[in-house]
Image (cartoon, rainbow over all chains, first blue to last red; front, side, top):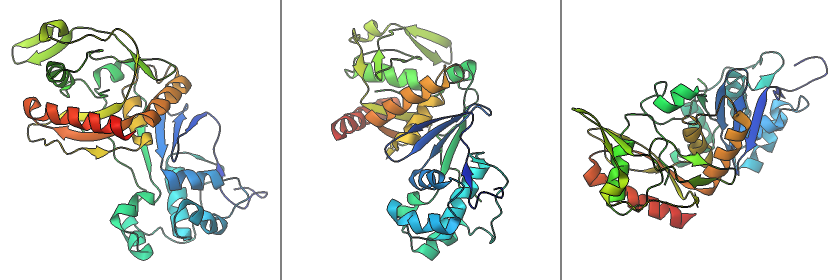
Length: 148
Length: 154
């Protein structure tokens, strides 16, 4: 964030962005990584215009079916930062992030609704040889990577 | 049905079981997908690994019908053989399915925009499931049932 911004800014450079009905798939041309943002993360990323504060983003969370809790936004922003999907200066989060489990307990989110919490699944884009041989692939299909 | 997955995950063995069970054969190892999300026939022989080495099997010899024209994809099945695997499929979101496809897309680095667009469209149109599987003779019919359910659900 610089002097003219009051909130985080979504990175748009060197990215290919594809919007699905409730998710966003992003290709990072610099790092050759592909990210899948779930609904809440995609919503938070869409709010990152440099003019929307964390509190204001939280106020808008009910539009995505989530309670208006700033900790949800902070977790989403941290995941976006780890995936290099935010522009500008590093995030300065005032309070430490609660764990996913603590946040679920605090919000009273049922296990079945936990998928609503921010998450980004990321893979390294395979080279042609890797895509054919699969040598770089993990032995299990991808699972969400949650911010710690 | 499309089975994205790495080499040695048991795809060819599963495909042989599926064509023996009546599935129409499109391809082994590669799926050619066009801008409309249609898969095109590319009927290479199946390469099956065994302790004695690689065995090449012509799908016609297994009684398979060979596809002759492009077809939409109804089901994306992400699966891998494990000796203790049990077929317990769980639904993948379109985004998760797109990632599973993209991690096996040969052109992802050379044509990322096209690859992302195509795989995202395909993943939005098809149903997708993920599960380990065990013995192919036991689980192939269940895979077929899962795929049929997916096609009917979309």
